[in-house]
Length: 491
Image 1: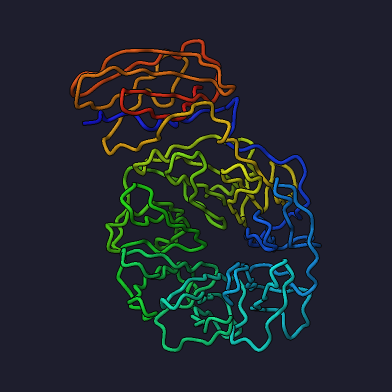
Image 2 (image 1 turned 90 degrees about the vertical axis):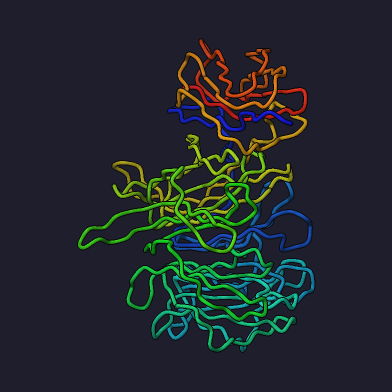
C-alpha cells in the first residue's frame, strides 16, 4: 500500500520572484478586442501558426511560426478580417491539413454583406481559397464548433450567433469532402453573445452539445443536448445556472475521467445584477452539481480556458474579463489534481476584458505557451488594445521526479498563505516508512532538506521557511515508492 502524500501547495502571495509565464520581447501581432484567436499548423512544418481577428488596427491576421515562437505575417488576400465573431481550424475535406471557418462582422465587406460566415480550404502550405455557395447563415457575436457528430469520420460544424432576423444555432453536416448541408429539425436554442461546444458529457463516446448565451429575448440560457451517436440530439435538463455575457470551458478537474464545467457571467434578481463564477462537477452521466470546494470572482465580457500549465497532469484554469467593479483582470488558478484551485499571482499577464485566450506549444519545448488579446486599462489612462504572447517556463522546473502522482486522499496545508515561518503539511499514511522533503528555489538551488518517518494515520510535517525570500519554490516529497513534486509560494 502506498501512503497518501501531499500533492498541492499552490499558495497565494502578493509578489513573486518567479513566474510560470514570461512575456515575449517582440511580437508582430496587432492589438485587438472583441475578437477570436486560433492556433494551428497551417503550412505542415510541425509548429503552431496563429490566426488573430478582432476590432482594432488589424493589418495582418495570419502569422506563421519559425518553430521557436518567432512569428511573421503571412499574406492571404482571400481571408476577410472580422470582429465580434469567431474563427476555427478543422480538416473538413480529409486531406490532412487544416481548413478554416470565419464568422463575424466584416467592415471591409460591401454594405450588403457586413455579416459573414465563410469557409476556406487549405492547399497544405497555408494558402486558403474561399468555398463559394455554402449553406452557412451569416452571423456575428458568433461561435463555431467543429466535431464528428454522427460518427462518419468527418468534421461537422455547429454555428451560433446573431442573424438578420434574430438568433441562430444551426448544425451543418459534412459529406466528407468539405461540402456541408444544414441539418433540419435540431432542438438547439439560438443564442447571441454566447458559445456552443461539443463535449462528451455522458461517457458514451459521442459528441454532445452545451450552449450558453442570450436567447432571442436577450434572456440568459444554458442548454445541454445528448447525442445518440448518429447526430440526433435530445435536451437533458440541467441545474446549471443560466448566465449572460458568459464564458465557459470543460475539463476533468477532479480526475474521475469525465468533463466538468467552469462557467462565469451575470444574472439578475429583480432589479439587481450579480456576477457569478462556478465549477460544476459531472457525475459521469451528464448531470452536474455545483462544487463547494472553490470560490471564484465572477466576470463578464471575457474568456476562460482550462489547460495544464504546470505539467502535473491536472487542468489548471485561466480567467480573463471584467469584474463587478469594472476592473479588467487576468487570473491563473492551479489545480491540485483533485479539483481544488489556488490562485497564483502572474503579475506579467496583461489584465484584459473583451478578451480571447489560447494555449499552444509555440516554441517546441513541450509545454503550453499563452496568447492573450483584449482591452486593458490602467487607472487614469485610456484603454489599450493588446495581443501578448507569453512563454511557459514550466520546463525549467528544477525537480526531476521519477513520477508525478495524484493521490485520492484529502490533504490540508496551513497556514494558507504561507508566511516567513513554518509551512505545515497534513496527510494520511497507511504504513510506517521514511519520508524526505526537499525545497528548491526558482534557480534550482536546494534550500531545505528534511528526513523523517511517517506514522500510520494522520501526519503533520512542518517545513521551515524562515528567512526564505518571497517567491516561487519547488517542493519534492519522497517515499521509497514515489517521488512527488509541487510548487510553493512564500510571501
